[in-house]
Length: 80
Image 1 (cartoon, rainbow, N blue to C red):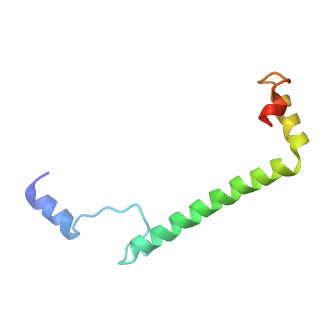
Image 2 (cartoon, helix red, strand yellow):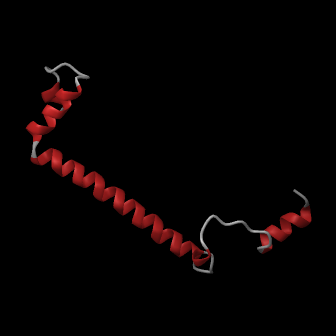
């Protein structure tokens, strides 16, 4: 890349952003941080819900492992 083009890109010229215009202000990092936090919290809720469902019904969870028929039934109680 040429020196002028690099300097212009550093000054803010010819910037290409993947975020909508709403997020491209001076607070763009904080908006992206909030979106990132929201995404991580959503994934955490999904994993917690899946874990709670397995803890509440361990026999049903063991049956679902057996239904996949990927491992011998003798090992299922150890895994579940």
